[in-house]
Length: 285
View 1 (cartoon, helix red, strand yellow):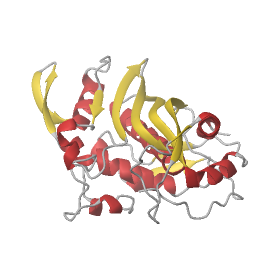
View 2 (cartoon, one colour; view 1 turned 30 degrees about the vertical axis):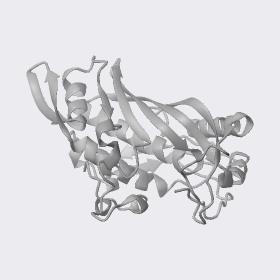
View 3 (cartoon, helix red, strand yellow; view 1 turned 180 degrees about the vertical axis):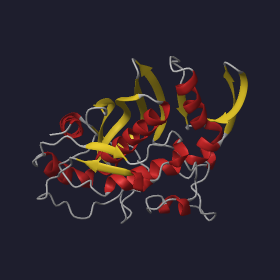
View 4 (cartoon, one colour; view 1 turned 135 degrees about the vertical axis):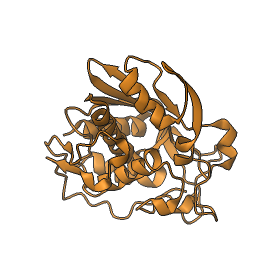
């Protein structure tokens, strides 16, 4: 099995065995029929992936097409710096769009905001993405290469507060490492998605910065499984994982982050459990 399979299985087993129930706490989330979408959760999960050795893809079910949609979303946030759902090729944000066709001052909106940053050449104005790229090339030893999109003054104008909200980038012996911090994680619907897209972002930033790909450390505050997902998760983690080692190949040698396109990415060496059929997964809103 892959590292992603192992981390997913171990985390889900821990949630099912020792998780806290949300029943009676007045949860915000609802199922499509209007009933409370309760869950069981654990606090403070850290999963690590050596992306330089293996791209983190779950083989317990088919992620062949999912990975492209996940990369498309990360480009929407980090490259296009957009909050407009029309700029996204999937419909995963449609339910959060307002009358103006945006998700408010969230995600890409925050990445596009410009700040005055201290640099070795003096004060420079740029956004968070460009500041990370600048530091990776000009001050890779820095321990202050961070981003944050959980901006309190703008929370009231966000249609959904960010789940994955901050990153830290560290360069050690020529390898680029990424720490992703996430306040909340739906294990069935989002865990594989988030790890794949941020692993892909790590690969892009390493390439344009002339660095090797290191590790992705994924810190999750509230890690949960929704009540109607539990039977599906139990079926999934008791299924057969594949003995493979996926690799992300980028068919674009660019050193400019803004040149990457979804079609530049190919997964090699991937296989999945073709017997696993989960059917339509209910989504809590």
